[in-house]
Image 1: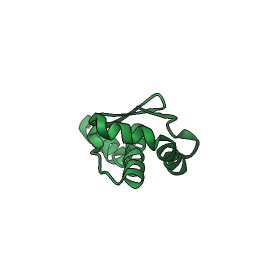
Image 2: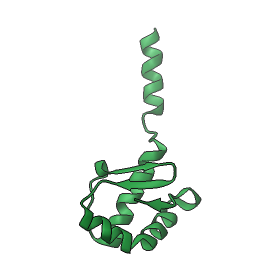
Image 3: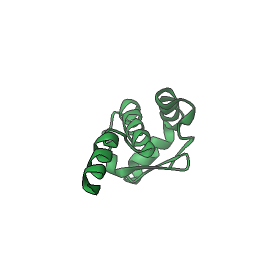
Length: 87
């Protein structure tokens, strides 16, 4: 009985994604559109309104140069809930 209830709940809510996940995907798309570099989603994390990217320093300096454009692309995709900083 309990397993059937658990299975129903899992099926009902399995399509939902974590809020962080959608921000990570949006950050990946924004980075790819601005920098033309494909960064794996496993290297991107979003915490408290900041996007953290674990990439080599050479690419991080390119991100810093285009930071305004990347944040604008994020704001376009996520609206008012977009991250405010990239590190």
